[in-house]
Amino acid sequence: MNQGLTIGDLAARTGLAVSAIRFYETHDIVKPVRNQGGHRRYGRADIRRLSFVMAAQKLGFSLSEIAPHLRRLPDHKAPTKADWTRISKTFRHDIDARIAALEDLRDKLDGCIGCGCLSLETCALYNPADVKGKDGTGPRNLTAMIT
Image 1: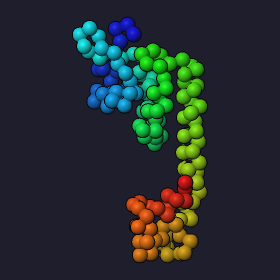
Image 2: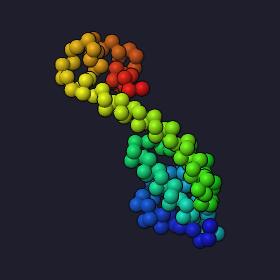
Image 3: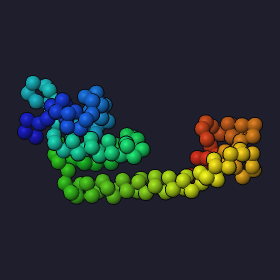
Image 4: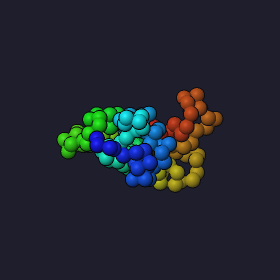
């Protein structure tokens, strides 16, 4: 890995705070090596890993959804095109499922929120006497429609 990048170098290059990089390190997104002085050193490939995480999080994916994919990449060396292709194939399933759920939600929003009545028997939000509360928290009727 040569001299490697310091955590400050990596922060400057990615725009992430040093504390965020350390957080990602605890989730095995990046795996620095230690130099003779005991300081962390990162590879240039870590810029790509962190960039991928940042892009995926911006699209609504949680770190717990992203990390398993990145753990399949080799440690301490730049991933090959084949490595990234393998990741993209497995992550594509998650992306396609997210797109389908978003399209379903988009298509149903006008009917379930746009009506404004909250009293029709067909309304997905209507929950008389909070009967759905016994099933758990959150908008159970609405989320059931989009899964």
